[in-house]
Length: 115
Length: 114
Figure: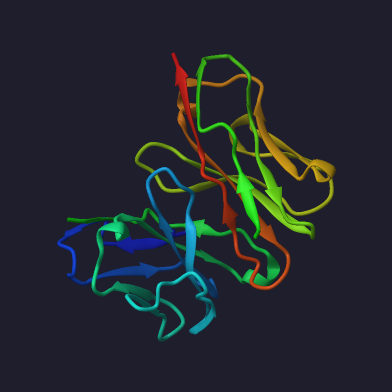
C-alpha cells in the first residue's frame, strides 16, 4: 500500500515570497490533515479536511495560509506572504475517517526555510 | 485548553537498558492514545495505540504502553533498548469529541549508545 506522498521535500524562500506544498493521501482515506512542526515542538494541526470540506481550521493563520482539497483527494497548502517564523516542517497525514477515531498516517514532510 | 506533556526531552541510554518515557494529558473525557516514532531521516510512524480494553498495549519492536486513567498517563516502556531505537518519540491524544483531532506532546529524543 502506497503511503502519503508530499512534495517538495525541501524549500528555501525569502520572506514575503509565496510557497505551495502538495499532498496525496493514502487511497480511500476521507480525512486529510496538514500539520506544522516547528523545531523542538510536536506537530500542530493547521487544517483538517473530510473529503473536500473543512472540518477544522481553527489554528490556520488565515491572513497568510490557505489550503484546498478540491476533488476530495489531493491537497495543496499555500503560504503568501511567508514570514521568518513560518520556517518549519509541514506534514500531511490521512486517515480512513476521523469519526472512527482511526489512526493517522503521515507523509515525509516538507522542510521550509524562510530567509 | 487540552495539552499533552512529555517531561523527558532528551534521554541517553546504553544498549540493554530499560526505557520508560512519560506522557500525561489534560482532558477529562474519553480519549484515544498514541505513541509515534520518528527514526532519523524517516517520517512519523505509529508505534502503538490504545482505543479501549486492556490498558496495557503492545506495539512493534517490543514496545508497550500502559494507560492509567486515574493519572491521565500513557507511559511508553521497553525492557531492553537497542541502538536502532535511537529516534524521537511523540505521544498524541485524541479526545473522542468534536473533530477528534490529535494533540501532540513536544517529543522525547532518545539516543542509545552502542
